[in-house]
Image (tube, one colour):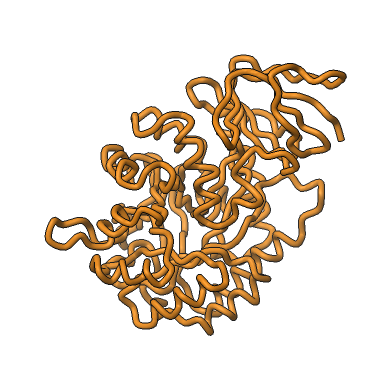
Length: 393
């Protein structure tokens, strides 16, 4: 494979962003940054642009007509291809609340998709599996299927992990359910992240889960007991535990930008994780679809549960891309470009304990990176050092 150097106005590197210079790519992997052009190699001139790590989406249910609930390996690969074209080079396919057996089938299909790839595959890397449910509360079930809600079970988890080939990296629960603390401790001992969400937990119940080893909060604000000055609730726990991570859907529809700003101020950008929570209909035209076994309507850049009469009900999920979410965060004045990019790359990867393989431009890693203009419009994606061309709409 070719060796070349990228010339650009700014590079977002692990230590800091640096202005100007050259980033070497050798045989599909990152080399080092240097102030001067390396001798004897092709220089690809991206003057007027910024270079950032590829986006890392740690909470996403599918894309472009395919979802994890379909238990379709080919569909997962098709989603990966379309995600990469839009700047997401790593993702953690996220399951829905469903029957125990079907969740296992979904895990097996994701593993099969990952195993099927050869060196020529040009799609976003599958960096693990996220189980969003079925250990939730009815009060905050949201767009999850209430028929399949159960208490946490490590034995059930082990069955899923076996089918996943060890790929499960995150599991979400409502900590007020029986057996939660034992479940959290067991997963934490194996290095698997437990997230708190779809929960009506009191502050004390949520804090007990954190003390047992839970380290993340599921799409903070959405699907959880809110903040009250006499009962801080699940949200209060998310805001006041400095070492935990807080996911936030950054489409401006699930959470108002001022509320996102308040969360980031409370947590610090270093523990705020930009996610999409994108449904399988992401990237498709507006219309009627199925999501998590439930009918949804995509309208105005958002998905809603569909009522029996065909009208829109509660919000079901987003159809956002993470690159767009980064731009949103900067345009709203929530964070700087440097902070927003890190919240969608290295912070996201660290929150899911996958930062050893993605989220940063480091020598020797796959050269997965994106090209932004100065307004954070996505211009191009590279995967393993090869350009995927201009982004899809």
